[in-house]
Image (cartoon, rainbow, N blue to C red; front, side, top):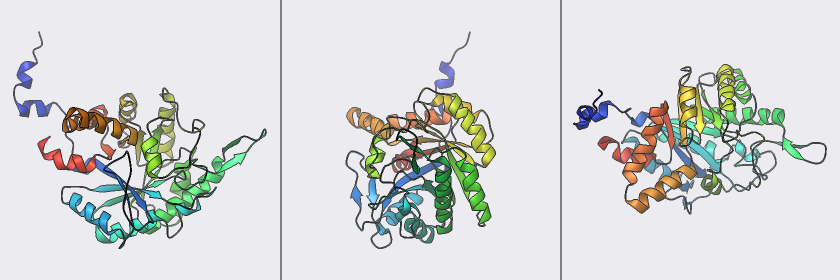
Length: 326
C-alpha cells in the first residue's frame, strides 16, 4: 500500500517533488511609448507605459534593479498614437520599440531583448495584419501582403539590436517569411520565438488598453478556437519546420493540456504567456485574500509542471522578489 506522508515530512523532501523555477526562465513584458513621461495603466497596475524621457531613463533604472535580482530577458511592445492601415509606425526609425531596444542594449548589454512582431498595436483598425475587401464587401486579412510587412518589421527590430523576435500575428507561414528575411540580411543569429498556440481568447482586454488598441470585433479568422487542440499541434509542426527556435502558448493557465502536448514533442522549448487577463485574475484574488505570494507561485509552478521551460509574465518583478523563498 502506497504511503505519501513520509515524502512530505520535510521542506526539502517536498521541494524535490516540484519543478524548480529559475530567474533565467522569466521574460518580462514591457510597454514602451514615444511620450516623454511614464504613464500608469489604469486597471493593470503596477504596469506602466514607459516614457522615453532621457532615453528611457526610468525604465533603465527599473531594469537595473531587476538585473541585480537575476532578470535575463525582456519583451517589448510599442504604444503609438499615429496608427494607419499598414501599421507604418511598427518599423519607423522613431518608433518606441526600436528606440528602446537601442537604449537597453547600450545600458544593459547582458539582457536578452525580444520584440513582439505584430501590427495590431500600430493599425487604425486594430487587426494583426493588412486587410483586403472580398466579394460582398467583407474585409479579411491579406495573408501574403501581411507576411511582407511582418518580415520587414522583424528585420528592423533585428537591425536595432533585438536578440529575438516574437511573431504574435498568427498569419500562415510567417515564420518562414521572417526567417528568410533575417537570413538574407545577415541576421541568422537572431532567434524566433513563435506564438504557436494563440487563442481567440477573452483574456486580452487589459493588454489592449495598455497599447491603446482601436480594435473592435474578433480575430477568429486567424486566432485559434479556445476549445481546439488540433490547431496548436498543426501550428507547432509548421512553425518548427519553418525555423522557430521556441514556441509560445497564449493564454496559458487554462491550457496546460496544450503545454504538455507541445513540450512532449521535445523539439524546441515551450514558453507560457501569462496574459493580462490572467494576471488581473491572479492579482485580484491575491489582493482580496492576502494570498498573493501563494497564488502567484502556484500558477507559475503549474505551468512548469505542465512542461513549460519559459514564462512570459507581468509578475516577473514580484517573482524575483520572492524567488529565494520558493
